[in-house]
View 1: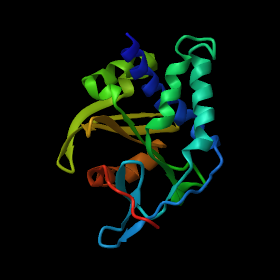
View 2 (view 1 turned 30 degrees about the vertical axis):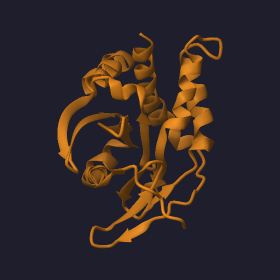
View 3 (view 1 turned 90 degrees about the horizontal axis):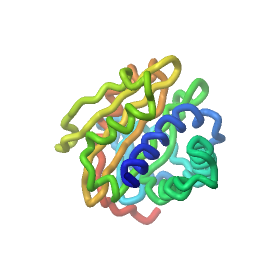
View 4 (view 1 turned 135 degrees about the vertical axis):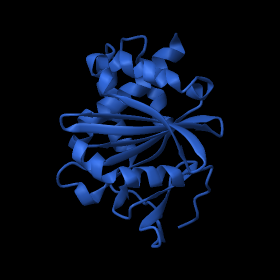
Length: 213
């Protein structure tokens, strides 16, 4: 039961961030990009991973955003007094990369967060869909789920689009973690940028060592 609740809270992060992230101020952080002009992409290092993204992406300090995310989720589940309150705090140590696309920042920046979790690596990825159905209620019919092969991995892809909010999440297991690469954007941006999303996910390398800048 506890694991299932943790799973649903992880899904709540997606919904909370989709509603709240445009309100956050931008705080740039070193990204250590490596140019790869043949693909029009750059290499960015995160925690235990690397990913190729368009060069317009900017890494951010997740520490400045997490307090708002965690506070919103805790309020949803009943505040600090809730017995589930402590479960949300584990999100803080599970962020692999976090940032936004500066090309569309004036309207609604496409944001990217890469999450990893050891607990969920022991569960079937299909349980994410079950958690989404509980969280989204009537909107669960708007979640598309399919399997894709990207970068040699079998990946579960979940996507959602309604009104001004859209996101697509890619989930796979590797190195004893469940990894979720989540792009948060608008329906219009998602339609235009989906090819870039797929290329970025296919480029992910886990356990990459960040070079000294």
